[in-house]
Image 1 (cartoon, rainbow, N blue to C red):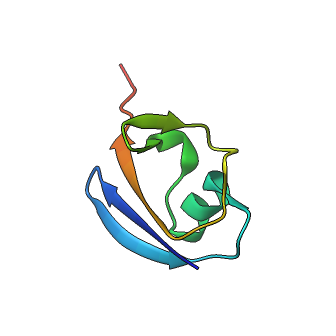
Image 2 (image 1 turned 60 degrees about the vertical axis):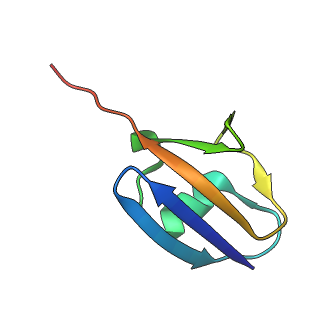
Length: 66
């Protein structure tokens, strides 16, 4: 199953199994989960959300530091 990740300077797709968590999708795409917020249809999704269909997820980069 194909999941596309767009936004925040990312534009990539990964092949995953049905029922994969967003956290594991991010790791498969070599994106550290703590650096992004993930949304779909203007809804923020927790990283433990399981994906069971082909989908495009939007990413927002979280900045931190001092």
